[in-house]
Length: 288
Image 1 (cartoon, rainbow, N blue to C red):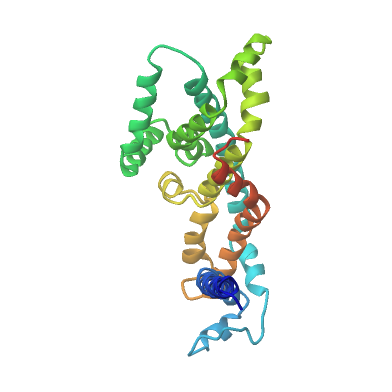
Image 2 (cartoon, rainbow, N blue to C red; image 1 turned 45 degrees about the vertical axis):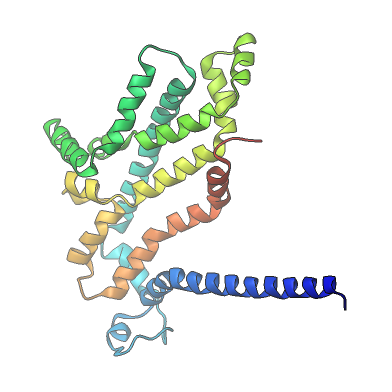
């Protein structure tokens, strides 16, 4: 065996060892990340008596039951919480996308006096602590008499400086020649936006939509502040209501069943659009 074959063999062994170590570490990390989900589902299919009789935690269910899932919809208004969250998520995401798309287009393609100054002021808003924004929004919504309403829930979330900045940067990566050629052909700004810019930046737009949906679905602090009427509770706030007035603090399996039901829509959403999300992150919203 010559020196070249020996070097190749050693390189092959090193590569194999590296892959084994890498996949082993990834597998261990995957187990650590997924274990809480497994424990949540496992606890949700245990009966109340079985769960409380375990002096040491068991990693399998001896007599699984779906009663906890039935109780999640019959003992509390989980269906109403789902409907409220769906309305809040869809309307908020739709309004936000309209606002940020037009704002990003204006900052990236249109020319108007003071554009750079206005955009700088926009970016400076990101430096304001969120706690101060929440206090200001709370006082404003309260003074307008919009507490315990979908309008009060939705209004403070219909824009995002960060998403405007992100989309603006993506729009600016589109060559100016396309815009000039479109204007020569007599294409209006709106047609250029909807027929050229949005299709090219669709991965980033989809990513923003998914992130906003997740943000709305998990919203807790603002809905908790602005609503004290169960008719307007979202699923995240409904968990507290379930804990206090539904199953009780000690009924952990029923609580876990409700959490599983609430988590399923986001898990399905991610599984469907995870390729788009990765594409939007890796490609920066532009096509080759």
